[in-house]
Image (cartoon, rainbow over all chains, first blue to last red):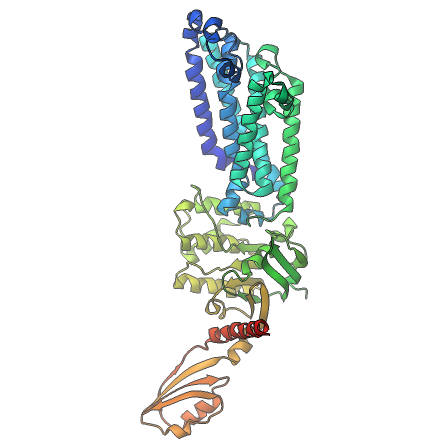
Length: 263
Length: 303
């Protein structure tokens, strides 16, 4: 069942891996020219950005240093969101999409326990995302070496692990909503809303006291707060993400086991 | 012998909408049971309840002596959904192979033999299959592991007549092997030739379960007799069971209730050159159940 799900994912995941890799090559590729003209992209130039936009981009400090550039263009906004989108689309194919298409009906009448079915699909999702993360990690590292970013592999690995955990978390949210309701649109809305608000809270919201406490329910807080590119693996934060994912996966399993399929 | 399907007070509501109300039914091993009713009567609801796709609001159902919530019990059932969805780039053969593996392995030769009988092309990507060809794939996956119980929801939909005949032959073989079939349809004609019993469901309620042989016995039959010379009408008038008699020259047309014995004996006194006996129209009897029920409903409303 895991193998079958992975086969179903194959095309779209290969597409995402290629897309993300191309994105990184393009952005990291221009780093050498940025490094050579610090006055154009340096702190002073960045100061011209409106404050809120800068906040939204994670501060844009230190754009010309290797770690700062890598953080700003890769790990701050674009790559995590692209990876979340990839995880969400893949996770929707686990339950909600086949249920809406009607193909799930035959699958649940096979001699597989329903709990097992959801677990297998979760495992396939995790393995698929792991594969995409591994490919893009490799591309990031090779590109970082090639343009002289100057960040060691273990830091890149630490940051990339965060991308994987964040994507898997939102993928599992998708899976859980899909398993509980069978509705793809609802799962997509929940994930999109949570991801956007979560991101806003830890960026712009940091300076707004009224909503600052919301960062505790924002997955991005656990993703970015530890600054893995600078500080290395933030074990505690990542364990929170992984733990929340496990709880959601369990919720998905129990919810799907209890309900009517396809009505 | 324990019943293959044992439903007791089985009831399903979708929110406030009634799907099935208080179904009590037993299906015995080796039986072919035709489950009849118009669209939306509750056939698919019943079938989905039997397979644990949906869960009953009230009541119980036991399938093959266990609950179909157990994966092992589902392994002994073959199922064709009423709205079979097959999609994707995957070829039909690969999909069948996957289903076979999940079911603990199905010999490839058996899949090929079924595909040949039904004239199905397994090398086509599933999204390119026509409705009829999808239905064939659905039938193959339901039959291929030789399950003890086959549950087929509208199995003949989209099949051309030749393939329908082959399918009915397959159902008869299953019965000969002592296995059990539950098949639904909205037309009696599709199931009457293979079914031992038919159940009629309407607006969520099982309103009749009939033995097909008994139903046929009661059936109205149209008969046409042609003689070599004109025959006197009075010889045929008033025969037991003969209705709607029309005698025109050398031809006698009528309908028969029950046995045609008296008519045959009356005809035997002349030279019969041609005899036409239309199949008993079970559909008509079938419909009388509905109209009775309707009359019943009307009475209740007017009361």
